[in-house]
Image (cartoon, rainbow, N blue to C red):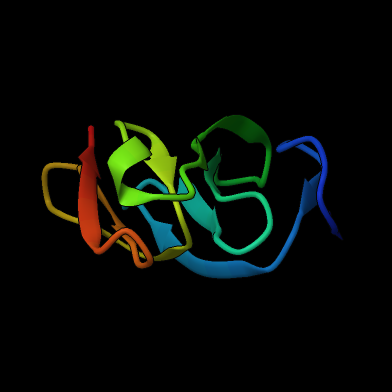
Length: 93
């Protein structure tokens, strides 16, 4: 995996966190450059990515972020994403 901006399955631009599910699946937050969350299987194979930049809180919607800065996963496999600059936490299942 190369660190720079580009396709979610090939590149990152300043990762900020990583979170694992019990089965080894993991999520990486690409918080500063790409502003997205990327999901991989336990072997590191790209599965999916979501998120796009929302520069102001007034333009925020579901799956828009401005500095994805942290993540956590609960026992129901929900992913909590800290959208630092927009001062909120989004929950994904």
